[in-house]
Image (tube, rainbow, N blue to C red; front, side, top):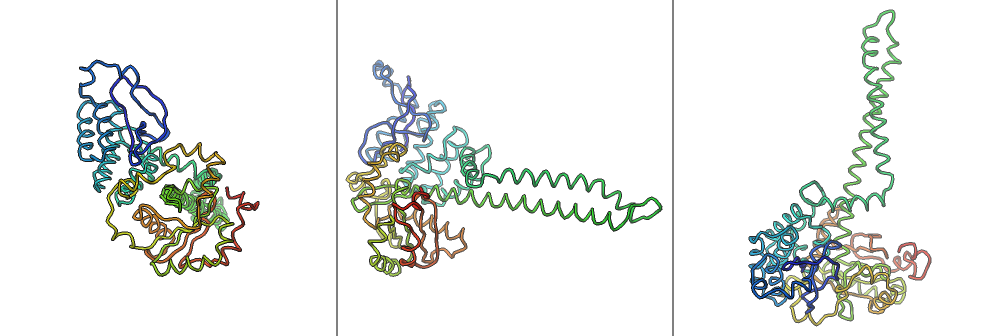
Length: 435
């Protein structure tokens, strides 16, 4: 859960993201890559009267403490109180964000979305924070999150402007000349329009006839070329816009996919993004019988698949809805969550550059992983099926590249012999090109 500004005076700094679910007591963030706050040494020496004065910052701090102890209802009261105590923008952002985390914990998707929407619109909350925070994993499995993400993807001044800008930057990298092409489409269409402006009077004169009238066939041909050029160029421009929107939707889905959580065979909880460069996850989604049969067949090719970094991720439709679990973190009971180690506590960007960290992860990947937060997984797979024209709920497989992007997908279960032939070993040169 994210932390905001405690009682003044404050000190701006960066700090790693902790998690109350694992019993840590370090500072909390409220904006990924943004400003971080903690109480300065001068504030700790404040007089008793100052310390006892209720402020927005003190309410946020107390709310975070209560949330870490599982007293979500009391924490929610503190965050709501903070919003009534004339908070500064940072305190208001943190109050709304942490209030949304409480609502998500309680399964109140609409209230959580309203808080996040206000924080995005009025207090410059980064949408990436919503995507990355494990405390909002349950919210990301709700339909309200999908609505909020769609609003953010569309962009605008209200919410999601920064999110759409980031998506567009990624889109420009993947399709670097789209902007240039659209410029030429507009420029050439404008030139054809100007030519048409002069051609229409000539065409009218040619139709009326007369000694000085232009040749009708030649003038009509020029007009037809101009009209055809405008229609084609306009069609190409709108086609490029459509392709860009489809690409932005796919990039948003890829970002959501990268944050889906797994539990490795060693009980370590990771997100898919943390397996980049070390594994090729293969998602197997379907009924229990279909998925079990596919895993059994994969066992016959286990040695070769492990050489290629294949990590099986079974997702069995509806098998997880009958298991009653408390809403703690990724959907695990609090005691179980505390007992599980996780590498999500440290700064991933630094860990991703650590060869030893990747080696440890590689050693812990034992051919198959277990999904955490199944509702979130199922919702992502259904969204992906809709985007590819597949009926939601059908058995499908999705193979990811080493860089985390989708390599291939299809109906049913994969042909493992073909997969072995298609995927190069991790140490091969072609695998290095995927990283």
